[in-house]
Image (cartoon, rainbow, N blue to C red; front, top):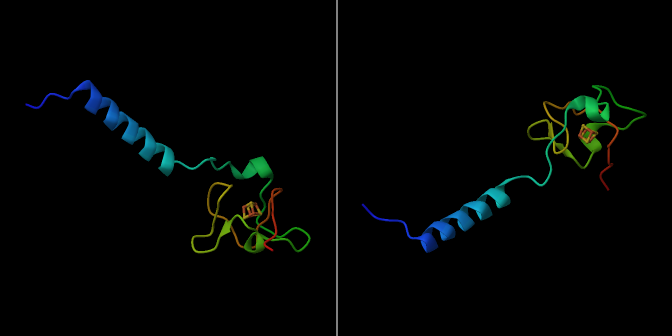
Length: 80
Ligand code: SF4
């Protein structure tokens, strides 16, 4: 049985920390209620035109759950 030296152990822990840090989003999604998400547009503004919308999966980078392209919430940011 191979004994793990202290140096190797800390090297593995550092690598594990780096992998965890690099694969964890810098922000967590929030529930729909937080930003008053609604299934309908607001004054012509809709998720389809928002920078946070992910059309391939009907998801949002900021809000949890399935998001309608016609939805809207308070942090809407129009694509330029
Ligand atoms: S309007 Fe809100 S829910 Fe819709 S894509 Fe933008 S941030 Fe997400």
